[in-house]
Length: 145
Image (cartoon, rainbow, N blue to C red):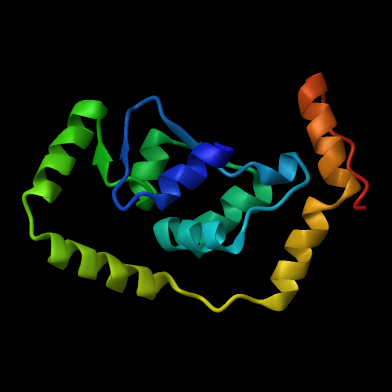
């Protein structure tokens, strides 16, 4: 969830245990994530599922994450170690160059309108209300300001 999801999106290959959950519940707190996170999420799960997750605060189970392509390997730390061991045996320059190429595929030009909305959300009364509600363990009351 939240920052954990951003960390997962930063990974080249995602391994998830059966009890893992994935979400971007920012609308519950009155804030927004950066454009990079949205691009990575949409690239990982498709624009429809990304919209569902961000606009409704939908949480994906490990099974759902596997089904939509957010995770590539099922398992725990042992499975992740097997993948890592395979990667370190390969040509480093080839891996580095391929990562650069894959990152170019995801590149989208930033939109000034989105950047303004991002700044507005992060400076909003709704963000303060979301944080207060979270700390007080109550439902937030957003005003759109």
